[in-house]
Image 1 (cartoon, rainbow, N blue to C red):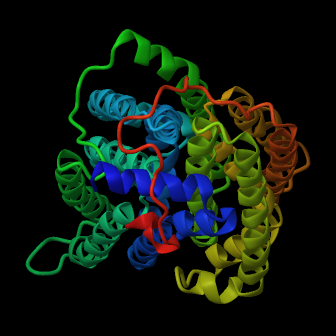
Image 2: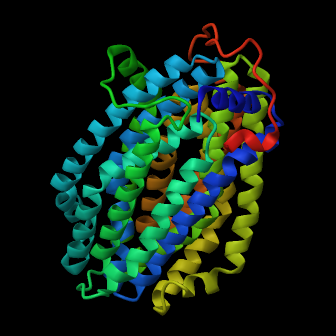
Image 3: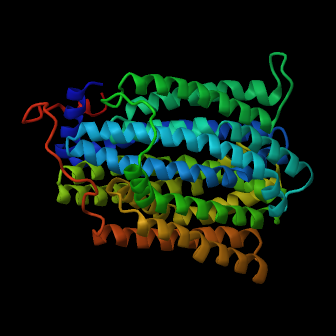
Length: 475
């Protein structure tokens, strides 16, 4: 994509019909998330045919992996705010500089995160209460995923920089390739086809890492060729950019770190309820994540529209975009929640034939679905924070959602009122409803509605950007 194409895309994001712009940006991301959720579902279906311990391994590994991935999300939040607002102001030189330096930071963080996970995984699982084969399988799965952590963070970066420029179709194509390759490799590595030994959960992890590596090679080729509208080459972040990372991405990274530690505590509570409950937790989350795919798409789309319009000093339009994004997600997830509750028995049976696991999974879906629209509103509000660069409040709310609401409620309901798994599901639902309500109030308060980058004279691409037809947004 050349500079003129980037300028046309910016014009559409800052002047086109808001609902159409958000939907056009969100749809490819939602499709990519659906493919990723489908791939997770395939993992779960295959692993459910191996053993309960193999089925539970991805859920056991997830909190630790996301503990370190949260640092990468902080960098990407900084990228979204700075690059989208610079593009909105037509300061493309700054957008290129920010993107290149943040790529260097991402690569260094990926290597450090992989090493940290490898060194801490076993201790973390033992402290959570995993033992025997459950510990063995979860640890093996996590160590393989740790090797792929640099690829995960690199893909996060690629998706963020492309979305900030207004292009979400290209990341969709790369993600689709990764998901399809993962699905092809899954049965080969899990069950040991084509002369390979059966690897179970480890095979699923190897498939994921290989698929991500292939996607990253394509992503880097596109970045070096100027896919965002400018060429991106990794460089070292300077002092000014480190300040931006700490101010914008710092609260988000802190939130992800603290929240991930909270999820480790929650997993400890779930693990002590037995392997069937852990397996049910994994199955239910896979199903719920399919419906919540819309959340990720609208989070990023809202961030792009809010960021570019704040950069262009279109404050009222940025506010309308925030309201629209939250309303669309709340409505879509309300419909999705009703759908999965109604079809929960059929959906769960696709993943496991173990009656005890089915019972716990169906009960979790019935309860947790009530809070899904509010969780969607919370994550879309995070998109508003991401685009505006005003991340402090929403990050604090994310921490409070887990540590002040969910964990105390889960402990009380499980251990004091002896509600077992129902106590965990009720705590999840209540925390999501309260956090979602407060996030909606924050968006309505408009304290975020001001740019974080200074406007500069536009680069010489012509005094008046050319008008474009609607479909050009993702070209």
